Structures are given as C-alpha cells and as structure tokens.
Length: 430
Ligand code: GLU
Ligand code: MG
Image (tube, rainbow, N blue to C red; front, side, top):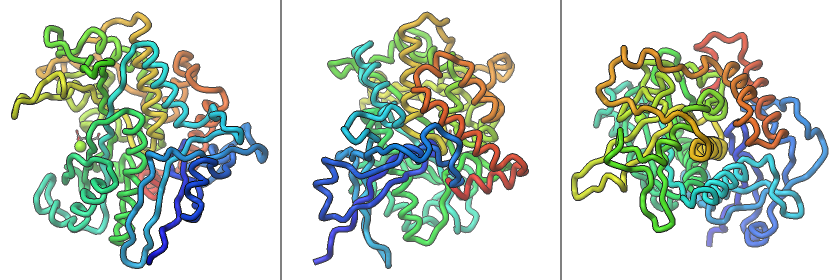
C-alpha cells in the first residue's frame, strides 16, 4: 500500500505566492482543526524573496487554519510523489481571524456585501499563461493545441478530478500562450480555485519538464497574460440581478451602480489587481487588456466588459450575463482582487456616483478618446491607492502598509532594469 502524501497547508500572500508548510498525512485530521504555526512577518516577503520593511518584526505568532473544502490531492507522476494542498486562513493562536489575512479580507467583503444587498456574488477567474519548450505555432491553432499534448488533456482531466470544474482550454494569441477557464461558482470559492489552479498548472508543468509563467508580460513586445475576473450577482432566490434588457447594455440599475463603484475607484484598485512592476506594461491601449477606464459592451479594451450572451441551445441572457474586470493579472493576490472589486461594487451601490455609460459595440477610437487612463506604472497606482481614502480605509492599516512596502521593495528590486530584463525577472518568479 502506498502511503498518503503529506498535506501542504498554505496561504497566498501579497506577492501572490502560495507559501506554507507540510504535515504528515497521519496528522491531517488534527491539523484541519488546529492549524499549523505561521509568522506575521511572512506577509512582508516580496516575490523576489526579500523581506520588506514591516511593523511585525521578529515577534508574534499565527496559525494557518485550513479551509477543508479547498483541499486537493495532486497525483504522483514520474519520480515525483503526489501532494496534498489545502488553503488556509491566517488566525491568531486563539482562533480569531487575523485582520491582515487576504482571505479574511475577501470573506468579510463578501459578508458585508451580502448583508447590505442581500445578494450573493458568483465569479470566475480566467487565466492566461505561457508554456515553454514548444516549437512556434499559429495563434488559436489546432497545431498548437496538439503540440502541447499531453499537457492539455491531463490538465483538463486533473482539474475535473480535483473538482475545479474546467470550462475551456485554448491555444491563445501570444507566442506559446494558452488560456484555461473554470466554471463560475461562489465567489470566494472562485478565488480559492484561482490560487489552486496556478499550482495545479505549475505542478503539471514540473512533471512534464516544462517552464510555465503567468507573468503579465513575459516579453515587452509580446502579448500579455491577463486574469479576467467575471462577476455576477444573485438574489436570495438565486435569480440573476445584473440583467435588465430594457436598459442600456442590458445592465440593471443595480448593476450600473455596482459597475460605477469599480470604475470610480479603478486607479486605486489597479494597485491591488495588477500588482507587479511589469503589470502596467501590459495595461496599455491596443493590447486587448485595458485601453482605458470605461464600461464597454463586448469590448476587449474596456476595464469592465459587458460579456456576450447566447441564445443557442435555449440559453437565457439573464443567466449568462456578467461583467468582466480585465485589469487583473496573476501577480495579484486573488483574494485581495476579489475583495476590492466587491467593496468597490458595494460602494457604488450604497453611494451616489454618476451612472456609467456602457459604450456600445460600435464605439470608435475617436468616441473613446476621452476616457480616463489607468495609472502608467505600479508606482503611480500605489500613489492612487494611498490617495483614495475610501479604498485605503477598507484595509487594516498594517495590511495596507505591508502591501505598499512589499510593492515598493519589488519596484526597487527591478528599478534599474530595462523593460525586457524586467519582464524576464518577473517571469522568473511568477
Ligand atoms: N491577453 C489579453 C490580456 O492581456 C486578453 C486577450 C483576451 O481577450 O482573451 O488581457
Ligand atoms: Mg484570453
């Protein structure tokens, strides 16, 4: 009989790196109840491995308390044994949630949203990434799809077996670029799955001896790897709340306010959702990432895209209708990304902002010439985050300070690199 593999209990930190520690399988049941030890200052580790200045220092202790529903078992293959992986919340030793834990941040945003609106959030995170070691092939081609085999089939199979509900696997536009999408689900679970997904992909790539990167821009002249976050809202009876065919773009009054919150706070949000020094090289016009801060019907240059619906096979628009936030990438913590989008949406619902104009599909470049731009760099985005007191107040001061400190240390780490070396350095760690 083969022994069960150890279970790795993990958080996803401000560098969007999955960090934690493993316990023997025999301890699993006890650890699910009691957690494992963790250190507050770990939150200040940058994606390059340095510890940024922080308030925690060498003192204090936490527990990583597993979220049992997030537990997955990665299969053994070749010489590599299998592994259990389970996400965790960071809590004090007496079990109180740690106010700097990114998952706690997302969970409390969703709880507050539900309490204020009665609505549940459904989400899905789409990931693009670059797979190394393949010969050059055409965008979207069957040839690229087949050239990546058996990686692709195994990925779909594994995600299915792990309960992550894969939806599409496709050869994307950029060189060696692929995309994997998961089905929409409860928003917190969707963020958990986004974190697990990256590890499943990396683990499979490891077993295939392939390099993989989720970096936002592996090559400054190439295509970006985005994370597109799809959001929809449901009332207590499970009825969709974003759709109203009588209104512009089909966006309900409530949906319009939800969108207004994200659009109004977009410059500050982008510091959280596009969180590496390379991220803003991707977020430029004509890259089909984000060309400006606007709401667009089926427009891939919009910050917020009203996604298409299809009546084929009896499909109903209200069920499919969703908003896609396009200014995220995989260097951002998925829980913080979700948390700030939900808090911004809630802000839009509870405050009075101008109702956004959904730019129709036919909007021309000239029409859109006046739309505001996102910050041009992470440095600018961090300044926007600190300036936007509404957004800054969503965070415990220690969490905000640690975040800005980590990000400024990452900027400092690459400050003298040319764009190409900068993109390479970010690709090495993401
Ligand atoms: N690769 C684009 C990005 O950086 C997205 C392309 C698409 O619409 O799938 O976001
Ligand atoms: Mg894509």
